[in-house]
Figure 1 (spheres, rainbow, N blue to C red):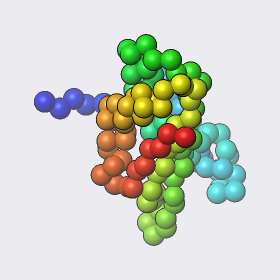
Figure 2 (cartoon, rainbow, N blue to C red; figure 1 turned 90 degrees about the vertical axis):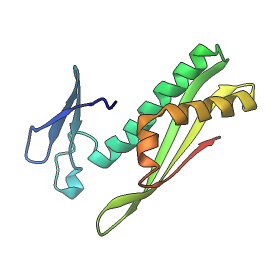
Figure 3 (tube, one colour; figure 1 turned 180 degrees about the horizontal axis):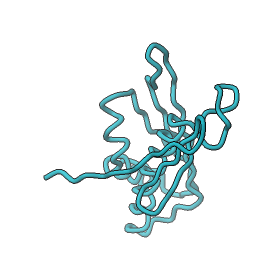
Figure 4 (cartoon, rainbow, N blue to C red; figure 1 turned 90 degrees about the horizontal axis):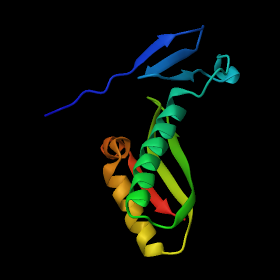
Length: 133
């Protein structure tokens, strides 16, 4: 059985929009160099942040449920842009965290990747790699 997730996006300026998910809002806009007002991140940047947020949520849940000694988790996500039509051809995420058990951390990263809706969706469209630093 499928479930639906719905968000709303409305125009709030000449180039800006506001996305709403449940009670949460995010502003999207183009930088001034691209004709915008720089009121928020661009949609593609939000896509990369969505991947990071989804993955982080799953990773933190895996860490907490296993009472793993992991702290200061940080993700760096980079997308390789292509043109005609503009799209990401590859996305790379690097996981950095304080931990003492590399094998356990690698397992936690795998668990988070498998549980991440955004990662599972993007894998069908781009070359997605997730690495532990």
